[in-house]
Image (cartoon, rainbow over all chains, first blue to last red; front, top):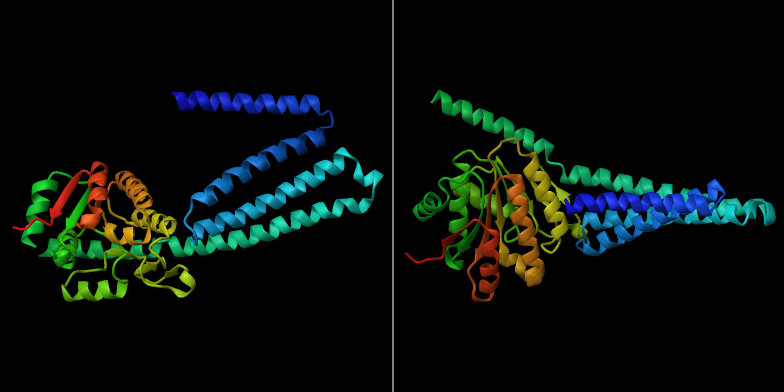
Length: 149
Length: 189
């Protein structure tokens, strides 16, 4: 009951925050930027907390660290993009001011690929599907033998 | 073996799933472990054997000598040193690389238990005393609390083995509250 109430209150708070951002910031693109930055920071905080509680050297911790780097680069892209929109860097400074943002995005996707490969390996290592099928066959055979005898 | 059967009959007869803390005498440690596994596998119950104490190969040879079938057991070995301490997998065993890598041990156990095809299954954790050599008391206590909770979710016959040593006594006493029964194989008969 308490947990349910907490979730409802949390959702109301998030909705109120979103409404406030869109009211204060008139430019929709900048407002969306602020929203993504806030969610990005929250994601980084949670991921860092998870990293701290996992065993050193574990596969899950390594995966979490990689995921953290992905999040950092996505956040950097969001920050760069929002600032560029807010201060109109493209018009006032230089067209090339867009490119660092894209560089952050490329880095994020590059690490995403590495992280995905890592999760593929983890799936192969921690997956016991083959053994389970073998065990199923052995148990079936043993039961058949028992019935016959 | 008779003592093990008697202890199982007396304390676990009516239970299909449980979390049991087995305290073992250091001199009879191996014999007792083998007895428990034999008792479980004779009934055709598949399971997961987590070894922090002896390497998988040694365990397999011992099982073979005692004519205990290992075909229906998934082994998780956290004692054999792997290259670079990384995870390695063979047909019969998953090598974690280090007994202090509790995160990977937990994931491996969860995946192995959930993969087992039968309703009735066991988890044998060998042993609490070795875990204490690589981790501090608080970490071990939290891990066993987590493991006992998981064993209930998995609905397995869970057995956590511990040597009854003077220095582990306090921890064992504290852990008894998480377990359904204590199988005392330390008593002299």
